[in-house]
Image (cartoon, rainbow, N blue to C red; front, top):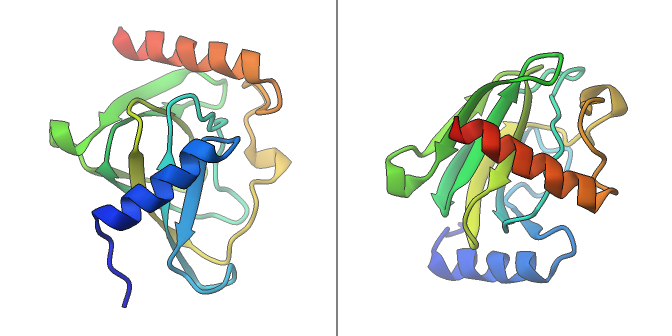
Length: 157
């Protein structure tokens, strides 16, 4: 049995702060080929989640924010934001399910944010056709930061 408690969230969050990507997973599934992937994803502000989708293989993605706050973004095929929503237990919005093939990204709003994610396995890295061609690469940190700022300006409208 694995318990999700404050100590575990604090432990994974501390690792995220020290990680160059400003995030850290804690997997509950034993292997990456498990038919159901379940994990904690601790993330910090300025961690860049490039817009992507889960198509070929088709995978829905569900998550619940346990602590902190994120802004989720849904895009059309041209990269225009069609939905933005703050997901925060403090605001009474706890999670979201994203259908397979839907372009999405998020911006972390609070330090110490931890989400519980569930998606079908086995784990498959995001392939090039599932990475948005209209968004900056994670390798370009300066452009990624500008892009996240732009997304947050759109969310404020």
